Length: 274
Ligand code: ATR
Image (cartoon, rainbow, N blue to C red):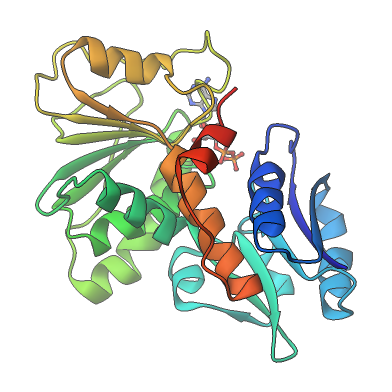
């Protein structure tokens, strides 16, 4: 029996086991998929087990998406560009670090038929998922990206990393950083923080003067409607949660490991509701 894992810290909230196990059963694959809470000094041993084929694939979630990089043999171009790995495979004897969050986000946006071209984006948060969202948005031809993070240094770090690498390489508009509390004009605002995972949590930001025809996108999918999305809805704007992104990133990982395109239907989407 093949063995797959999602690792992170915390990891209890992860719905990856539910989703992957559903697809494993649907495709009659002899495999298990479980979650495991790890510490940073467990990563080396984890990769050793993948090399020895005791574990056949791993999903990486916060806070290890960057920390895992020193232990892999090779990064895909998406993982390299974002310095973020969420999927590990052993391919031709080599440990490969993939980033399927990018494709997950791109496919989610395509599915809602939202046109990113020329849009001004405000991203709240500069943690584990932000690098992938930035890269995906620029690949989809966003006009510019502004970052806002409670701890400004983390936003500035991400800004410098990107502006000096792929933003410069592709001639994209440079990423800007605003101070926490400022809400500049935008077409799309993305909550990429963990605020809202608990129902009563609320971002300390004022969106009351932003006008209409905006998209409020929350990376969080559980709860389905965070206070951030509620404020978007109440001001007459379009809203979308992170469920589709989550399902599509998982589907990309499933394809890498099993060479099968898993089915995404209403039953799959319903699996992830409370
Ligand atoms: P990490 O950054 O530790 O890898 P993450 O879940 O990927 O974890 O990121 C958490 C994000 O949510 C960060 O941008 C974090 O902001 P800080 O860098 O200031 O910690 C943000 N966040 C968490 N709690 C927050 C809060 N109460 N208000 C605003 N932002 C918050």
